Length: 495
Image (cartoon, rainbow, N blue to C red; front, top):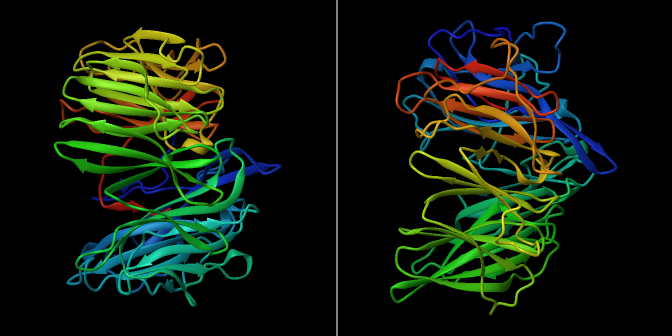
């Protein structure tokens, strides 16, 4: 590992790198980091975007200025937000970023500037002004990978707008189509790959809250890549949606309705292909108990109940009926329960983290004995997670063990568990750290997740000390990792 850029009194803050996406017959086979673009001052102290290639391993990459921002002294400019997309998902050089910043005395709430910068812009090219004062945009792609449109809420008009892309997927804000009007807020998610890693025309879901007194009930809208939009559900209570809780057929969500001292969690399935959402179950939670959705393997939907007495996992049939009774698959007095699903195998990797101990267990919710572990309980073991459900499936799952049972992960090693037989296949080394297998530093608390089939990343924090956080980048194919430190502030990674 080599130093490629040094910042005086400034430090990186990760938003998102750009990625190299490789498709074979419409199936995602590889996703790897392509470039990092950060915001930092130029030689004159002005805010600029810089691009750093991550693909050339033969020579040391050199940061290159991308675009020319004027009138924004770095020391007096606040970065309000950013969003990134691409004209073509399969061509990483077509990336672009939307940046919002405010130069003092302006603030992010008043007087902020929003601009678009292309990854190919030269250091003399002025950014393109974006006429909407926000950066929470979502990008709708065709199955070819070409950008079809940008979807976003214009806070000034209350319109959920569809901004059709130009030739070759060029982003454009010139002729918006208002899909929804009177919106006060919109919680957006988009689906471009199914759970088998196959690219599809993007489908977005928007949970829209409306203005007014009294305000109309919130609605869940489905938006297709071609701009067709329809309301698929009208809320009765508080609706919660999550991109990760889906399979190849449905997006699942809850509508929580108070009932006396209890709460009824109505659980719905919204067809990704189109059509109204349908109820598949309803569960009643006593005061102090909450229900959340975990994931679906296509046959079973796993849900989690959390109460003062502990945590319980249940499974529901994704096909319903709405009168079905949840089937318990795990119960524990531990409150810190997390779970991740390998969609291809249907294996559910569960962590039960108490104050000083963590136990791992693997369940198969759609198996013949869903409450019987197919691996574990594994004492002093913590499974990793996944950062993006649809593209993270691989043949192995990260594991951290053996844990010291003192509330930290210090001294534990990072391993890969074969999904085929649920046995440890290899242990990570860190060539830059020294010989032998890598161990989490003493007192460290680690979080690791897959991103794509080839790599994973995470961090090691030190909650009981002032030690700096360590970043981890793991190659899942070679079982090697790199450890890096973050010790400076005020540089923002853009895309």
